[in-house]
Length: 369
Image 1 (cartoon, rainbow, N blue to C red):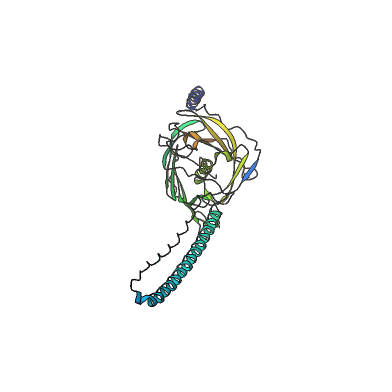
Image 2 (image 1 turned 90 degrees about the horizontal axis):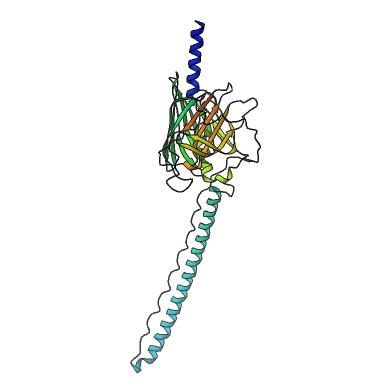
């Protein structure tokens, strides 16, 4: 019996070793060196084009002069000519006054419109505003690994439709069932703005968080407690697309040591996530090696041992190419890009790869983020 048990353990160990993905090592322990702290700011908007002033009204043409042919009518003609000249002079003076008034009104309207446009542009995009570029619609697929052992494919259905977005994340876990996370909302002055976030784990009923932006409240179905809603607040999955949008808008801003703060809501609470730029690293994906920028979530409180690491790759439009969540007990859940590593089909940093990828953000799934 003992020999049989030992043999079974040896066979299981061999199977786990063969199933491991050893091309990407576990994230090394990182000692943060903060060089800059970024907090949520309004995203930059395109400036409003200046309003062209209206053209002044043309001056009326002078009436034609009439010839005098009868000598007997000289005196009457002279009087008529004087009266016509006086009337013509009055008309010209009135026309000049009207033209000057029109020019003054047009100038005042132009100055008022320019001031209004400048005020609107200043309010929408201050000098310190964040540059922002939301990823276009796509279906992204990832290999999922639990402690390095290959699991089923994870997907995200991402829709960016004008000023609205929707994302549905599906990850299957062995012996538990599918985990489905949904986030939908719009794009506002601070970027991605969730209106409703829900998460369903296995057969459990879904927990829903409502972002009530009119009342500036977070409303939970899991708990009767409401909490204040901060500007630029995210949920556990939209935060990855928010980060990708910010990096797509200004990649040079996110240098090693730069820390970005996000207000992130879960299904019963919200907190600040400090996410630091670690640096550019190589990631081994299914289709080959790819350069990616590594971001890591710093501890949110004393004793926080749960880690979240995200790699965004410029070759696929700064979408997540790898996400690793490390639990306090050492268990790791990994999402690894399984699409083609081709450059975007449009302008650099603004398009999607040709392989119809999808981002599976929020590998932060096991329990609390």
